[in-house]
Length: 313
Ligand code: SF4
Ligand code: SF4
Ligand code: SF4
Image (tube, rainbow, N blue to C red; front, side, top):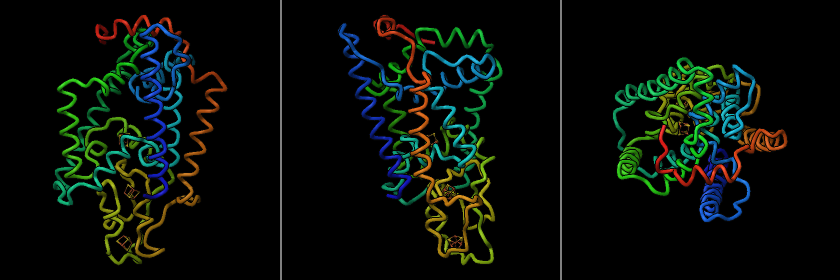
């Protein structure tokens, strides 16, 4: 396990602990007790709500007060993806970490790579759908109505329910994705995740790109073998694709010092430390500045929780 994966593992553990704390929070609320403060970390799993509040924030200057932590995290993830390539995917995302780990223990027989490249269009299609609906079609007042609706207020509780009380369809879909991940690298991230597609598109502006020297390359393919996304590094002179995670595993696995380089003044090996420090500072800064804690009271949250099964979009 390399340093970026250790960072992802630490974040996965923090997310699991936050999930357990949130589960207890809901349980205490339901039983009428004093549940304390809701953890903001779970709001990081509400990308659609965060995207809507980002549009509202950009157009009105009003920061989201229902799920402020979700908006803060989205802005942070977008900024680090623009600067440090798709570093949210390679250094933070716990789902990506699980997907990558499962890929390592899976079968070595891979699905045809050309078929796979064609299927990546699915996640861009999903992203285009969300961008059209949220960023183009919805007015600020429609977004305002959605954000203040009971469904959005307890969307994090609905998300938890998705995992703690999955429907039969959810179990089947997750089982299929698990199976596909075991027979081909990172199938969820590469084919289906619109969130990763968004970070990939903004990451094309990053100065962190992998560059291959044809002169010094011996064609050993160690770089390609190390890539979690099956990018054919040994055939490119520069990796510009939005599919590149910016994990730099290819550079770390290289055959010689001069065959692969990262086009940035910063040593890419420092990236896990930089991301960890920036994430910590962002969360601490948002807590201090009042951009983390929701204004929804426990009483209001409890009221909506009591009718959670009746709530839909
Ligand atoms: S593609 Fe999606 S699931 Fe995969 S690491 Fe990126 S955001 Fe996470
Ligand atoms: S690791 Fe270096 S030498 Fe080997 S294929 Fe990649 S670029 Fe070429
Ligand atoms: S090309 Fe290199 S930096 Fe990009 S995803 Fe593959 S291994 Fe990571």
